[in-house]
Length: 109
Length: 112
Image (cartoon, rainbow over all chains, first blue to last red; front, side, top):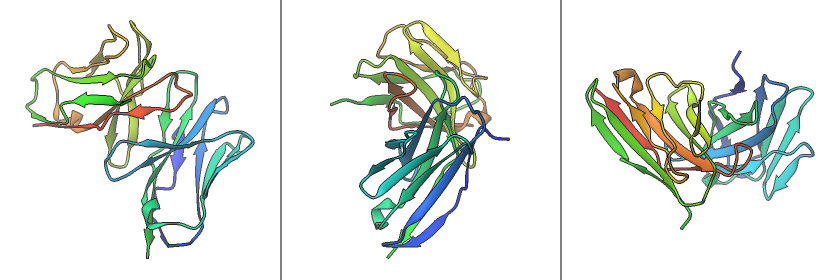
């Protein structure tokens, strides 16, 4: 089983739609969780950290479920500019980072 | 401007010819790491460094070497490149693994 798993998609959604991605992780001792965004073969950039209590940044909401070992990302009111690949990142120990393979989102007019 | 730079951005080379990809950051970050990205496999960590003179293997270290003699620089060395090392490489830095990772623009390497 992979340490971090994501549905590769693509998720094709119309503008204005709400879309949600999940990411499961295998190491219950994992400490930190993040969502990164990557545009076509460019460098990944932090979208948001994921906190135990859940957190929101504008149209984006991230949640962590430690009991079921997954994190989620919800995007409301999708924009064309949200089209990208969303990478889930987990630190299974304090020093390494494990990236999921990414979920591709395509928002159409 | 705070940034991570990598050089070269593109490189085509032949099997067995030693090469170095440089990575430099100007944010005084302790933690630096190298990744390779391949279709269907995502980003995989090659090596990381918690601080100067402290390096450790990531998930795919075979065929690579690194050094961390100065805080700002973390070069990736391929002593004898092979075609299976053809990939997109990213360097990243941060204050710690649990903090925001800042990535360089990537190096596209082709080994013939």
